[in-house]
Length: 84
Image (tube, rainbow, N blue to C red; front, side, top):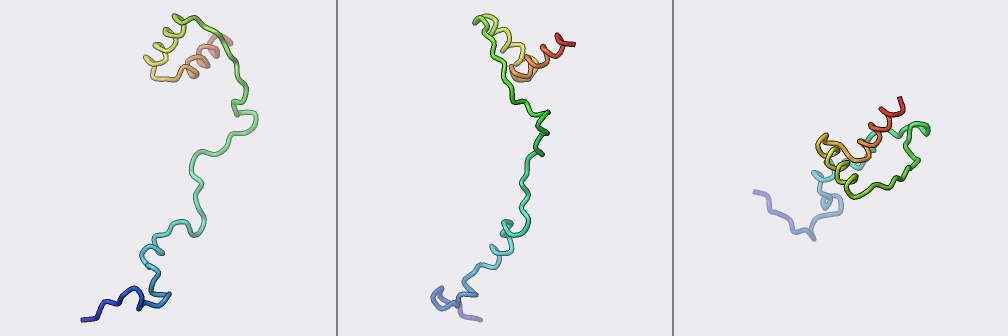
């Protein structure tokens, strides 16, 4: 049976863990992930601010939660319907 070498007895080429080197995914082309960037005309970059009463805010948040969407999405949908 072969004797296990101490770490100090290994030469530099043997010190590198070949399993880790083979599993290293940072080599080669790296996938950025995520969705592609939107075209400049499609990107939502403008903001509109509105003031509502506390009661209106509660109703808006409750309706958004009921529909399972964000308050912002609810407002966009509502405005899109109104602007048709």
